[in-house]
Image (cartoon, rainbow, N blue to C red; front, side):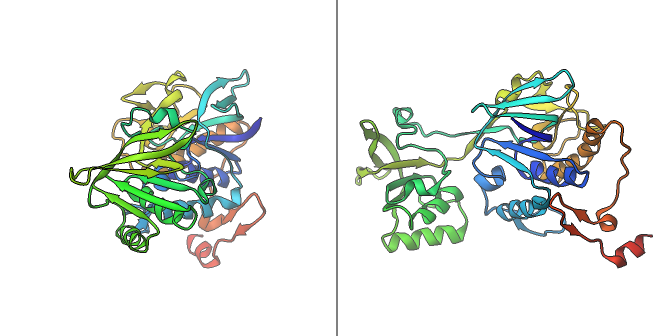
Length: 353
């Protein structure tokens, strides 16, 4: 069983920043996320999308924001359970909680923080009648380990950043990469589009635009797909493949969390925003896009604010006999669990005192 002070469900930007705020209070954190890597939508769906409302950054790419947050929390040594979904919540006699994932991993914490963005994410599947028959037999909806595709014939479907980025990356890993998009123009980052088209000219990517995958063939494992072209004269193309990866984004769902006895309103968790962002279950908080209250703004910076406030009250639950005195990082610096310390600048201390 994994034991921690604060268990955070959701490793998106709000969940990651919670680690920092909790770390300042010497609270240990562990995060659970159904995705294979930290960052939530920022990493999985639009890593190259620019964000304009992060303080002090006139513009920052979503993926870069996640990288910066991971660097910021490194001194506080958070734990991660990735690729697993929080399934059940069981309150113990002492007021603590045990959260178990869909793979049976148990986590014990004094405080649970739901920072799951819009909820857990499920892949949007293309309307192919027999696609379920080939799941885990050549069909995957996200790439967890690129080495799985080494020296394989891979076909990716999609027109966004994920499809483009993975097609470009796997061009140097797989023996053959095909990219299918139902439209002529891609909606991903311009530099990725240009690079994919250049690789197509070099023969490193087979590019099918204005086309869709319609049929899958194989016995115990996927062997081929049929690509249907919008242009009737082109008809259909039979493509031998080992792996088919439709990357059409992820659909947000509250998932099992919706069965935990929380007060839900319009697929979001109601919280006490006048005080601490606690839910109707004492010791369980909800911050970021997953929560709702009057005047709620679904912005990353709102999640950061909620994380900072929430951690103060989480500290009081975990340390009921200790008096907390807030110190500004400009005065006290930042001391990590690894003993590292970022000292406050002397001139700043003098100006404040």
